[in-house]
View 1 (tube, one colour):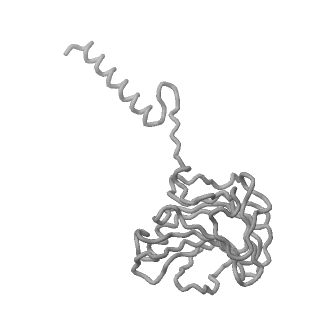
View 2 (view 1 turned 180 degrees about the vertical axis):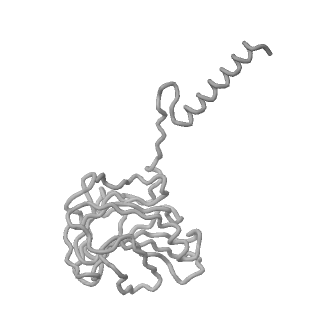
Length: 226
């Protein structure tokens, strides 16, 4: 092979390498490729923004429409000033345990003495064959520094945050709940049973909005810009 042919071959190889590199970087022919997830298909919760009011959420205690929405027209408020928490639960559309949970809460008022109140969500399993006595995990978002006495011995406790919540501001929360729940209950799946997500408040009036349960990749929520 002569030198002109070798030069043309080298140039062709270099051109192919540059094209592959551009594609890998998301660029082709001077245009950026838009790669976006599809979170609408991933959220295992129905009416996660509470635009339908109570909708599929099963209330316990004092619940209602929030005074202010983070997005859309509505949020969901739980109010409890006594010893019993206000709660709202929903059975997830998938039988599987969600990998990730995220959302926003807003404490409109907070009257609890230190460690007397809490804001939390609970992942519960029912009818699932497990290797432990536990049936779920309570994830404390704010309010309590130590776990209060729990009337449900089958629920373990895990802290995402501690201490009193900020009043009057939407606060982001998120956690990879899947591994924590699976390790606690001793089961990798929830086959044959149900998985529910419950919101719980004791010690004030707290609104929730833009909840998500699903894969971490498809999580549409991001912390507010500081």
